Length: 97
Image (tube, rainbow, N blue to C red):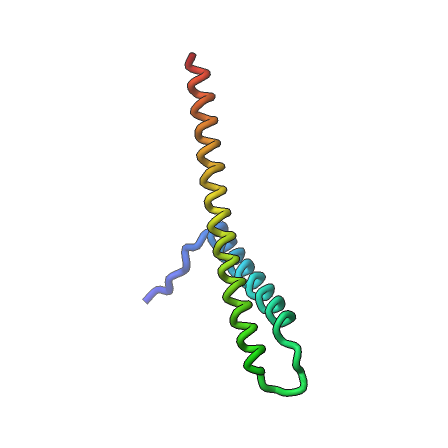
């Protein structure tokens, strides 16, 4: 049986690598932010309930904020694309006259 070689193009692999890098960057930022904000007791190995609650709330807020920003960016991109299409249509109509 012949071995199958993946057919990913360089651009697809580049996009996959970029996605992983973006995820890792976001994860690291979330971890650093919530750790700095919530963990302040280093005299014991156990995570205190207050720290755990704080970290969970921090993570939830960060993820909701990230999701909301993504939605707003998508809305902005759609508006921008609509404006570009409208401008192109106006230019095309102007050339016909």
